[in-house]
Length: 102
Image (cartoon, rainbow, N blue to C red; front, side, top):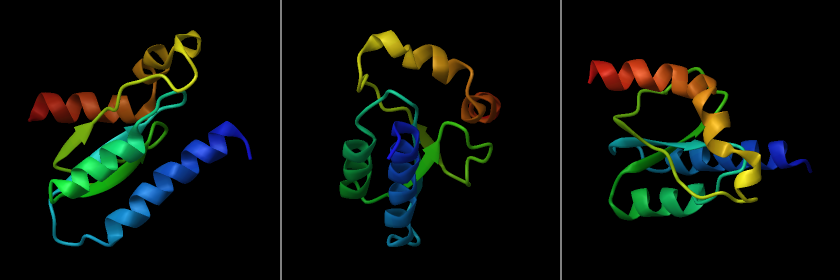
């Protein structure tokens, strides 16, 4: 399985886990290529009593989340430049205006 497919699968797994926590505050967790800690972040969101919602970096929809977490950490080292990839991603084009609007 390719790395891209694996990352997309992990984001989908976060979304599936979110379906089990209906009625809770929805917190988006963005997964970018080359980053780590999305699963640990989702676990922390669940332990805090909220519903984690997986957001893939290519998503154009924030899926009605109340907040968004951008997990840090490079899974494969900084040479992949995950920050540079994130700056040009579709989800960030949606997130920045939403954050500016409050």
